[in-house]
Image 1: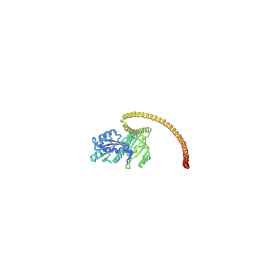
Image 2: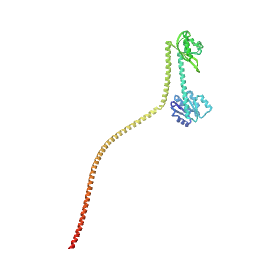
Image 3: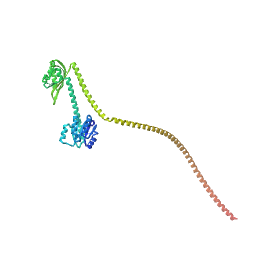
Length: 411
């Protein structure tokens, strides 16, 4: 399982002359890392490393390349940086290549065709190990500087399990007037004043036998029997779990020396804090330098930006103009809507009036229709009466004709 956060902090440089492999590697790895820098040969890679050495965290390189091969690239880089991780990707497994690579400090190999998952595993593993090693080296350097500073402000001597002095520091020699040949091989109590009780010495030895440190205030004497007082701390040093010897660190306790020691402690503290601040400041400078490199063509981008600003101002004026037109159109639309609404109300009222008149007219028509029907019935009845009377008249005429014929016959 990859530590994605850790990988995202890494900038890697790939050195590969095969364009297809190069594109495949870049495509597969770009999402895993902060940045993937591509170079085509050893010469280009070394130039890029010189340019970005504070930014690059690991180099992954082919061995067989034109101009400068991978082994030569590794040798050149190692002259500048002994610790940066370096991994070879190669189709070769010849002994000469392997020996040369190891000689110049290659960290790992991966054989082509490349397994991307395996390559990322190796990158993560190598970079984590390198980070830990650098932290240890920095810690050791800090401890070394600390002890160098302590050696200048404290009395330090080392004695073995039998109490015989093995080492005295320069500050002790300067203060006590003793030299190496005066104390080396002598019992450490030789520097103690005769007033120190045996109970205190026994207490010191008992504490150290139990692998505990001893602390206490002691009265000591110089070679010429001058008295001085110290705040003493004795620490057991172990090897393979067993006590090897004892280191005694002593600070003078006279007022003047206390002031001197406190001043030097402040100097030491300030030195350490200054170093921490410098380290953080350097990291910040490196980050800012990297960020600044992003703006290398700032003046060109500034010109482009100004052109864009001019274009934007033109577009903005057009937008304002369109907005004014839209406002005018909206005002017209509102007026048109208002007028339409009035007309709609008028039409609605007219329609309502027409509907009312239509209903009244319909009632009149219904009434007239009813009257017409009644009149039709009356007319039909009259027609029937007329037909009946006409028939009667016809019948009367027939009767008259018959009578006339009878009269004529009688004559």
